[in-house]
Length: 351
Image 1 (cartoon, rainbow, N blue to C red):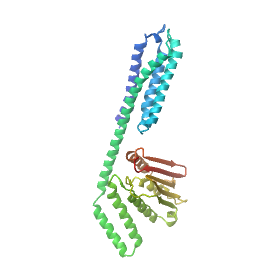
Image 2: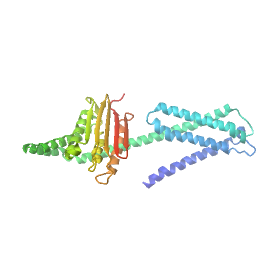
Image 3: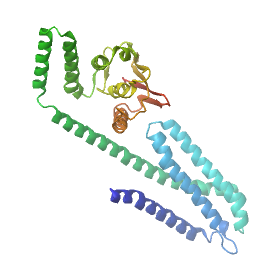
Image 4: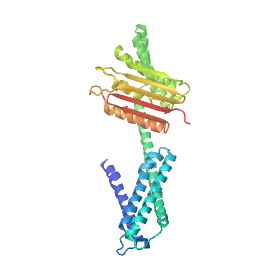
């Protein structure tokens, strides 16, 4: 791990420093005898340093900010507009500095502003081309690495899942026996719990293996999960949950188990014994767009909290959303002083 850290954060900056230093020395050796920069003492450091700084700004601002922030998110029009503005702005600033300041102080000859403009367009075009090559390659490597990591995580999860499937048929047969026994004993409450638990396990083991599941089955799974959670709570606490589903969710498909982590968090962190829970879960269908909104009081006490694993769960669901619904979802999380709120929008069908 230390070796990877040293390679990533040590060698790459040194390589960049050597490249820019070599470029600076090369250009300085080439232009130090040219008329526009020739002076009695051959001082050309100020314009060279200034031009190099602006080239570095153009190179890294595009490669490390504009490309990851806009290009990689397919916001191409905005990216091109910002890149053109950055490129033209730096060329004009560099040309104005050369013409009105550097040449007049450090050169024995005067050249027209247009000549300075053409020269800077040429040099900055080269810098921009190198920046595009570096930035797009770096972004592709990062994206490819993320895809590989997600594939590895998926494989690891599938292996864990396979290990957990210790003869599920035996488990379902046992649940059916317990259900029949509860019915025979007229224990309707226990029978209902067993039936809902069996439905949950059947969905997780069989239905959720597909890339997409029917939204109707996903919502039915959520219904059973919430009902089971409410049955373990006291009637007073259970009555504090507001749960509603609105809209037509027929004939729509969704990535299975993509909503449940947010709903689990409501029960995991929102149940309060000392004050009103104020939990709410809402699922709305607006045409092909699904909107999930959850809200719960924050439980800041040390009892019953698992912040580390909760954070991992949020990270995993964010990565799944990025992979499965790129540019087709919006996740807003408000972690306020007293409430934790989530609003998730997913466009279930691409335009």
